[in-house]
Image (cartoon, rainbow, N blue to C red; front, side):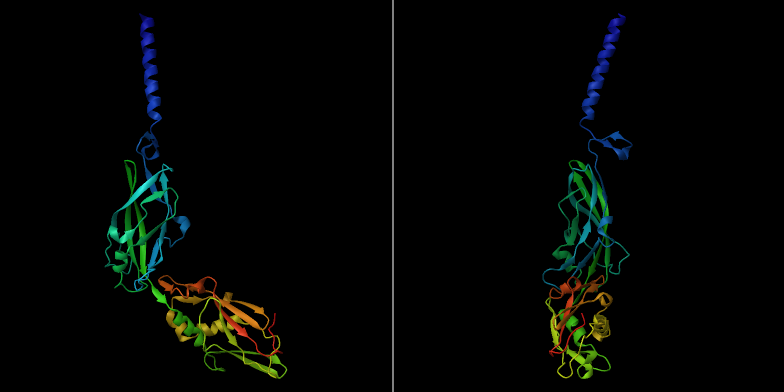
Length: 317
């Protein structure tokens, strides 16, 4: 009888063990529940720190008929299970009181978010055309701040995650404004729009004027001819991009733009034959953007080419 009881106990133990192993193979351990077994576990949190402090800022040109979004908001999310591809919808949008624009209420149809998001994937959030329209009456360079609740879904599991997004209607800086900065240079010794340089030549002390009154902005650069001519040529004229940069900074047009900064101290010069090229790169402040014909000045830079005319003139290399 005792042997029979022992056999029954051993058989029950084996059955229980087999059922336990089979169940574990089809479930996931949920660390949020202290290690409890949960086959529908899903964990999501925003992980955008590597995208920079302004990753959640969107800039929009409300005056444009196309290409209205100048900068999209960027995000990353950490998702567990890591192989999940979650469907995403907007559950709620709340305007915060930390912005200077507080009267624009957005709905889910005003924002564009990806339909699916994977673990660690960089994604963009943007305004739809209806969202852009809501900001048309808002002041330029001001900001509206929102908390957007995203619902992530993987199978039957869902997780809500809040992200903050800042929307700024930008002021567009035009090509004409940039051209007027250069045309407006002025110093006490020379006519407006003329850049003067001094050096020594066959005729002694010489001033060379480069006429920038007709300056036009292009990616290839603008060429300004000097008025040097024999015997008033110049020898080994020393390039000085900082001097011209300072004159540009002093113009009324430059001061009135406010959102554009010329990087004068890091301006470059290069000499090829009779021509010396000054290259200036610009930086934009938040809330400002360049029109499409001027955007290159923040990357390759604005080029001004100064060309000597006389055969006896030369640049210092």
